[in-house]
Amino acid sequence: MTIADLVARHRRVALDANALVYLLEAPDPLGRVTATILDAAEGGRLTVILATLALAEIAVGPVRAGDETIVERYADEIRDLRGVQIVPLTADIALDVGVIRGRYRIPLADAIHLATARQAGASAIVTNDRRMPDIPHVEVIQLADLVA
Image (cartoon, rainbow, N blue to C red; front, side):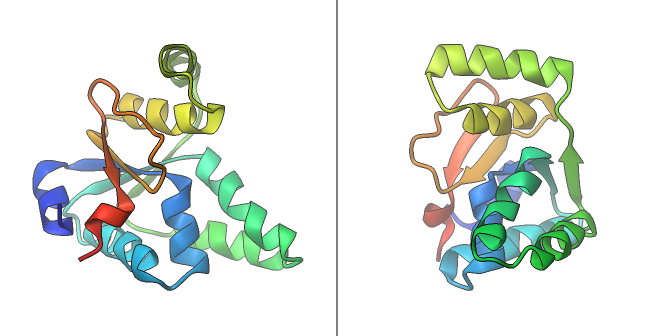
């Protein structure tokens, strides 16, 4: 699948936090693919959905590296992106998290990203986690598969 295919098939796409980590911390092909997806969102070709949990997850690396000052800069950059909707954890999402975790036996963070995607109307989530399962109404697309 290409980015063009992704945009043609999906109007609302969620991003797993690992896609943001590649973008912010590793200027490699995976980070460039994430940047291209965000460019499509800024251009109005799709809407990107992010669980608020993604903000917590992108803070971990810089803090562990001893650079807490970069955490707020990362968060500001993400909040300022046009075409990106940061979705808070609601009661409905939390219930869906429980259903997803119970049904698929996956980690809490993965269930939060999937439930947020589904509840926010995303028809796909882009991740680099091969263990993340497809769930009804949300196709899991591997970030690595989008690398041209």
